[in-house]
Image (cartoon, rainbow, N blue to C red; front, side, top):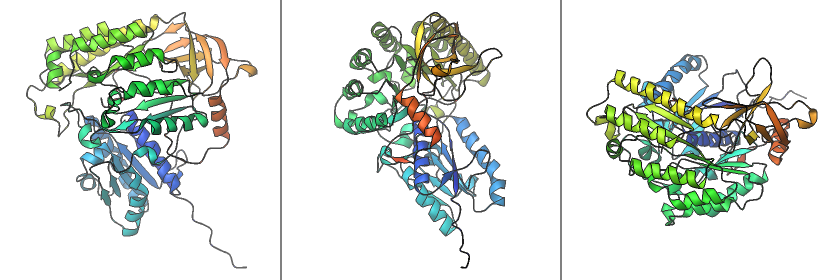
Length: 499
C-alpha cells in the first residue's frame, strides 16, 4: 500500500507571565485554552512555535521588560516565520495601538477582557498573514468559565471578582481591568468543591479588591459569608485571600477569619503610605489611624497572624516628614514582610502629571532606609517563632540545600516559608501537598529553618500530586490553576495584587 503522510506535529506554546496573581491566574487559562485547541507545552530548552506574553502595566519596568524580550525574539522569528508571538494582559489593553508599531513582528494583541479569543486570533493571523489586534472594553464572559490548566495538584487560585471601583491616583489597573464584576457565591463554592474533589487542599481567593466582593449584588457582608462557607467544605484545609483594601475591611471579615478554622492567620493589607497627606493625594479612602486600628483588631482576634503590606516610596510631593510617618507605621504594625516600590510614573494616571516629583537620589535613599527597617522588623517577628512547632504544607521542588542537611520547603499557616530537614526513613517520605509538623530552630527575615521534624502526614493532596507526576492530567474546564501560595519578599518590583 502507498505510504500515507504522517499527521503534522502539534504546535508548541509557551506563556510568559508578568505581574500579580491575577495575571498568573489568567495565564493558567491561556494555557488551558491553547491545549484545548491542540497546542502542547514546549519542552524545556526548546523554542516554542507560539510565545504568549501576559503583561502587567503597574510598573514602568514592565514596559521595558516586555519590549526587551520581544526584541530578543525578533531574530528568532526572522529565521522561523511560522513562529507566532502574542501579547495580552494589562499592557496590551493600554498600548493596543503601539505594540505592533514598536514590534511589527507581533502576530496577535489581545486585552484583559477577551483572553478566550487567543486561539481564534492565532488561527486568523496565520491564515490571513497579518497581525490581529482585538481589544474589548468590557468583560463578556467571566474568565473562570474558560478551560484552565492547573500547575499544582494541591493549591489553587479561585477568582471571586475582577476589576476595581477605586480611583487611586497612582494606579492604572481600573482603566485596564474595568469596573468590579462579582461571581455569585454559589459559583465560587462550586468551583472550590470541584477542586477539593480533585485533591486540592488549599485555595487562595483572588480579587483586585477582594473584600469589596458583593458590591455588584448588594451584600456588604458577602465576603465574610464566603469565608465562613469555605469552612464547611470537607477536605479544604487552608483558605487564603488577596488583596483586601483597608477602606472596606470590616469587622465581620475579622470575625470570620478568627472563627473559621481553615481560614489561615495571614493578612496582606496594602498600606501604600503612612502619611495622611499622601493618602489623600493618592485617593486612598482611609487614614493611618484607621489602618492601624484594623491591624490592632486583627491581632487581638488572631494573635498569630502574619501581616504583610505594599508601600510606595517617593510618591509625588512626598516630604521627609511623610516618609518618617510611613516608617513609624511600619514599626507599629510589625509587618512580617512588605512589597516595597519606588514610585514610577504611569501615563494615564493623575499622579503622572502631579508637581513635586521626588528626585531620584532622594527616592533611592528613602527606599533603602525603608527596606532596612522592614527587614529588621520582619526578622524580629520571625525570631519570635524559634522553638515553636508549626504544621507545614510541603511545597514543590527540593528546597534549600546546604552542605550537611538535605532540606525540603513548606509553608506554615501564616504563609511563612520554612526550610526543614527532609525525613530520612522510607516510611516518613513526604510529597508536595503532604503535611509535616516541625520545630523552628532558626529565623531569618524572610524564611525559617526547622532541623527537627516532629511528625508527617500523608494527604489526599500528596496522592493527587503523585498521580499527576505519573500521568499529567488533561486540561479541565472552569477550574483555576493551582500554585503554591507565594511568599512576601521585600524590595521586589512586581505587586502581589493591584490594591
